Structure formats: structure tokens, C-alpha cells
Image (tube, rainbow, N blue to C red; front, side, top):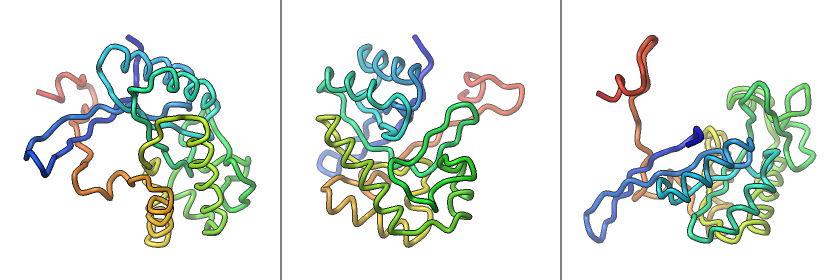
Length: 197
């Protein structure tokens, strides 16, 4: 199986007091290999959901593939950063305060905040991402801030929560029944399996 970026969530049902593990593919649309791994993990029963980076260079590919699999639930990974060195993406709108010196979304949340982003530009960008996702993928069901940037300040959080309410899409992390799980990260010289023991 290809390597996939997977995120696990612990979902607690208040109706049954049960906990369930939900494995979610992460950053679909950013790379062709992530798209392949996302689809393969779904087809093999490992994951049931994925989040998509709408301004990512491989968004059109993942949108078409997700529409062929109506059983996979999709979230919009609200993207205001582009963290990888060799693959970058630009905003969908022309917000001048949203980009770095090369015209890409900044690599980090700190870099994004250092730009002193104009909230009107942020709102236009996030709306463009949500609306493109909903036009392109049938089963868009939630919002999730990529790298936490869209909720990094009280003003950004208020804007993101406003959009979630307006578009009737729950904001992951704001819903009390869904919590992201933390997993042990390997220390230097340690394998992932060793970290999990």
C-alpha cells in the first residue's frame, strides 16, 4: 500500500456512550501520491473520510475520484498555508495579504499571521475554497482548518465559525463529540512501532 497521511479521530456518541475510531485521509489534492493513497485506503476499508486541499495542484483529480466513491465523507481543509518545500500552492483569490514574497500561501501559521492578513481577503479565500469544493465534490460534509491557521486568532476563529454556520458545515474541533487523538511520535533513532509500545 502507498504511504498515506492519515489522521485518527476519537468520536464519542452521546446517545450510546460508545467511542469509535475514525481514520481520515489528510491533505488530499496536494499530491498525486496522496490522492492514490487516500483512494486505496478507502477501497481497502481503512478510512471512511478524507479532507481536501482545494487550492492544491491535484484537487481536480481527487474531486473526480471522490465522486466515484459516494461512501467516503469529505471535509474541506480550509487552507491558508502551504507548508511543503517542493510543492506549493497559491490562494484561489487575489488577496495580497495572504501570500509570501513568491506569491504562495506562507509555509507556517506564524508566517501567515506575520503578513497581517486582511480579514476580508481571508473571508473571500475561504468562501472560494468552500464553494469550489461543494461544486466539485458531492459529499462535502465538514470544515477543518489546515494547520489550525483559520482559527489561530480570535478574529480568524470567529470568521471561520461564521462560515461554518452559514454553509451549514460543522467545524471539526468545535464539535464536542469529535476529538483528534494524539499518537506517540518516534524519538530520534526510534521506529514508529517502538514509539507505540
